[in-house]
Amino acid sequence: MGEAGGATILHADLDAFYASVEQLLDPSLRGKPVVVGEGVVLAASYDAKAFGVHAGMPGWRARELCPDVRFVGGHFRDYQRLGDQVIGVLRDFTPLVERISIDEAFLDVAGTEHLFGSPTEIARAIRRRVRAEVGLALSVGVARTKHLAKIASQAAKPDGLVVVEPELEFDFLQPLSIDLIWGVGPATHARLAGAGIRTIGDLAAAPGPVLKRLVGQAAGHKLGALATNLDSRRVETARRAVSIGAQHAFGRRQATADMLRSTLGYLADRVAGRLRSAGRAGRTITVRVRFTGLRSVTRSVTLSVPISTTLTLTEIATELAGSALNDHPHEREITLLAMSVSQLVDEFPLQLELSLGLDGDRRRSGSGAESARLALDRAMDSIRARFGRDSVGYATVMFSELGGVPEEFRELAEHPLESLKEPY
View 1 (cartoon, rainbow, N blue to C red):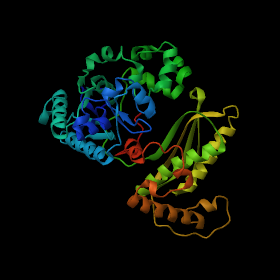
View 2: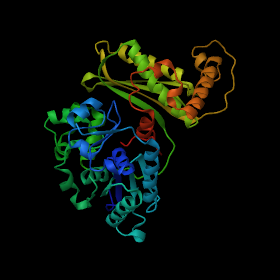
View 3: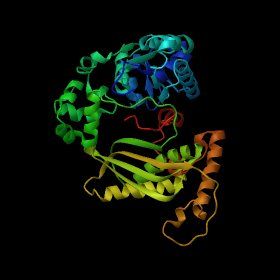
View 4: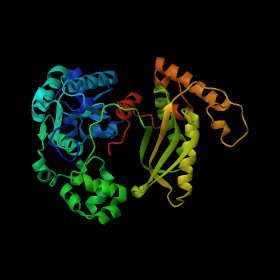
């Protein structure tokens, strides 16, 4: 729904999903602090979060904060199975379900009220069914827009329901912390708070030029609109991906050539593998480099033909990142590297081409080099499908220090289940 109409948008979000699934599978873990992961905390139960444990924290630190914490390896197939089961419940109430991750989705129930009652009654029925049929707690927010429904679901946690009627939107939003706005992470929160903007009401009252100076023109305009609940997006059902990407955040790292190649090789392996799995290839490669102080730069290139090979994507991404660093010689430390492939098309049968000796010829999909790379990638894809992702791979990937998070978890957390569209 857009700006007009009643509160018919629901945001359904499973509580502490991964840890809750582990407690469901092993009842002896219920009521105890649970962490999914070993060397790195992938997810934590509410009992563990109460001690300050959170995702991304080293395992030793989690045990230091909470000596009684229980570590579990993770049941990735069960995460997918139970997440799909919950989505099935949601679709029993409306065909307008937009799944945005393994454990959350938007619904538009405006057309089904005559069947199941008011949006509030529908939300209650959904929560009852998920608890009874799946065994998991589901928090739901009900509001007029997607933005507000998501904030309401966060306010409802754990295991609650919050309904925001249109006439109460301003009063509901005004006192809430700005970090409840989707897209305001710790760095943006710190920058806004440093200027005295701590609540959504503060953000709504901030002049446009102030927000532009603090977070940039595009982000400032977006945040200012969301603070006043201006959100015209509708709930969208399944659509094909418009891009595929991956990223890795560092603390602060010296941007050496070896580090760039290793990190981008690791990211390229994930992105290219997902492209081939979906039967897709892309023409535009984009790399984002974030320096200290939140400054980010992007570089992109559009090829004449689509690609999906790991080594070629690695080479191009490394060149783009190197260009970004060369243009900012005083920025030698980086905090994040990200890459994406867009302008996607369906992969087509490979047809070998005659080399004409032109620039970029070796990267054409029909060139001898590129066809050999694609054949190697597909062979490794087959081996990985049978024996697991760690069974074979390029050296830069197999020996990368970035492999602390299991690939199954990365796939669940990052892979678009029905859409790769940015939430905002």
